[in-house]
Length: 485
Ligand code: HEM
Image (tube, rainbow, N blue to C red; front, side, top):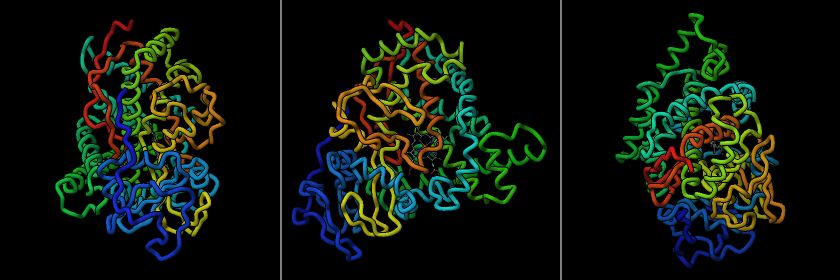
């Protein structure tokens, strides 16, 4: 696969070496050699490098512990050493909050829902929703996942060229709607798809506007606000319908949407937060998994040997549609799980997320003032040659087993790797609530598709761009071939 991995961004203002003071006037000690870090310019900081080559910017942090950068006048760091990631997410998680920058950036989208909530409010919300993600609930969704995947694959014809990015998004939205929300997306699918496109455009890191407030009346911001308005109206209708159904004693009332509606009835969640959470789940729950599926299919299509060995493994099991429970069982498809684990390493759908310390801290030997933005980048850590042999290469064979907590071990002979060299789902108490759901859906969908077709690349190069998630640069076209050998 040829894919865009760029050299560190070009130097800007060479007079600015490692920073000696932050915009609050306090001293900053930089641990390690920062002499070749991307240079900030006055006023805009590193914005020019981030927008001209966003992934190159995060690549520049590989091999370091912390990489200092500036967004306008704000001092920020990429936390590039797994031990630092573990401190922030796990060992000292109460000190590090989602923070102001995340709220400024995605607050209008995710509001007061679980993703941005802090403290007791977050604890309450997570406890309310957690039962929808218990292990047996998730495996209970296997039928729906297999059925939807089989219906999609059976609709393709031999030799057809499929845009797997579009197909994956349609599929994962349908599965999410059916399982966790208990709704038929029907004509609302277009509203969600338009909102997803508008979000991807608004947060496209190649645009300077992605880092500016959304009230600026640019066409992209206007389209974003309109699409979000339409989505909120659609969600309000969905919520009203569910309330009416619950009051009429209809439906089982056990899916996530019913749990959230029940929380508003007992006063533990207000109506706005309920709506913010439905937006959160619509996007966190379908876009990310769709991206994982897209990148897994492309990576396999682009690696015929890998694909052949996965096809063999699937043939041993047979069509998952004939045995959904068996297909959902742990260890049913280790070869497929390895593909999933490796795809999420090479193309982490959530390529970066942020934290801010609530008080001054020392992290990896560096003094960091309260409120400093820390970029936690799976993209950077997952492609760091300190922890990975051939980090740019798609090699499912590097994974051996999946533990209860997720993919952790691998076969290669590198020195023991720090745990947080791999964290596609984040870590600690705020790790992805949908991790098991996503892993099961990825496994089952891949197994269903590959039990029917072999995939061949039509799109020659997979090129990706960071937005709110790691987006493909355009359609990802694959040809489906029912002659699998
Ligand atoms: C391959 C698919 C997915 C990936 C790579 C992914 C990744 C992540 C990551 C990295 C975080 C942590 C963000 C942070 O710490 O700031 C997160 C949180 C979250 N994810 Fe996922 N996710 C995926 C699928 C899902 C699914 C299927 C759902 C729901 C059905 C979901 C819902 C959420 C929610 C609600 C949070 C916030 C949890 C909290 O703060 O308590 N995600 N996800």
